[in-house]
Image 1 (cartoon, rainbow, N blue to C red):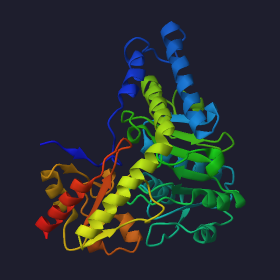
Image 2 (cartoon, one colour):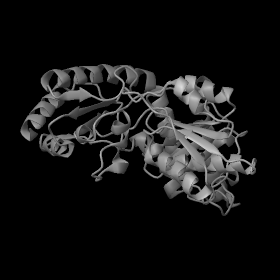
Image 3 (cartoon, one colour):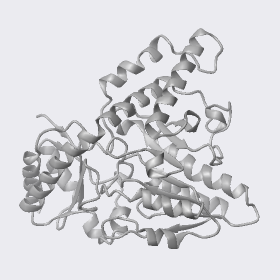
Length: 382
């Protein structure tokens, strides 16, 4: 039986073009980019080229790009690195960070670390029933000692997209750096620093068709950053360790391809998504769309099905050839209801019925058969 994979928010397959671009740096030009010989210098040149290509897409300078092991490390480096560096410049005052209760665990646990270990204060700005953050609430959360605002551009569970430019204006007015977790947004939404107004941005390669284990933190040069990893001083001293040259080349290639396809793919997949949502809500009386009905990622459709178990529905869907998820892959296997859905005001017992469908950028056909499979799966569970 063939399987239709609709869990692309968790990870995507590596694109053939990306593998082809990486191969020379896994086979022939495999040198350490810090080595001063022909093989090492070829690797260093490839690394510099990848860095400038990523910077071009983000509208940043090459020196603003830090290659990391993925989105989790990029978020940790942004939250801890910016907050700790800022607090070191004002040791006589307590430090305060602002985020929201619907962020990825890598952001929330980094904030928790700052509270537990460094004595920071933190404010979680509430969200509405669609997981949106209001500028008024964000403004009210800021204090004289706020050193960082960290917000997800698009939520990884329900797909809600924040008004980032408006939030950036709030942070800029208060002269506080804004970090944007854009791991889910990349390839679907604009990433230009000038357009969005962020000071730091996190990306992950495996959401874009690059291999797992490669990410990026773009951080403006004027923003102080305390490194998490110390050693050889790579990445301009901000992230020590021998660089993954092939991974950086693959990341740059995947990001460029996704950006080139973004506008067309977003429009095409949005239309398919909307038809799918309408069909599920029509055929399954208990289905409730989660997330903002308008401001949402093109590739995300998430529901609750009251009176069922989300995990049981997923098993029934897989029996019918559809692979999806109940939410974030980082929380898979947890018995706790989604912290995102609970923060949106959804009762815990309803949150545990959640199912998320996330689509690839190359999707080009209606998903009527999948909607029918959802109907049959929910009926089987009920």
